[in-house]
Image (tube, rainbow, N blue to C red; front, side, top):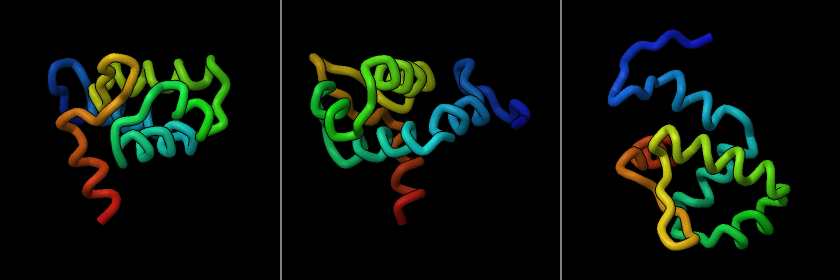
Amino acid sequence: MIKRMSNIEGISVGDIIQSISDSKSLNLFCSIAKGNMESEELKETKGLSRKQFYTRTSQLLKQGLIQRNKGSFSLTSLELLYIMHSS
């Protein structure tokens, strides 16, 4: 288990890592990072059930990694994680 090393507004590094720790969540996060995507499009292209999709997006929203705007998702200012990962 990852210790709470730093808390920024109640979110720990461990919580953020845990929210993208499984392959489906990370894949969803990376797809959103590539550009704004509609909920239905994400669900279909990632092959997630409705429950899997909403569970994962809820965690990503809760950790401040993504934001929702009128049915689509985009990254928040924490997109630096994605940029660092992809370089």
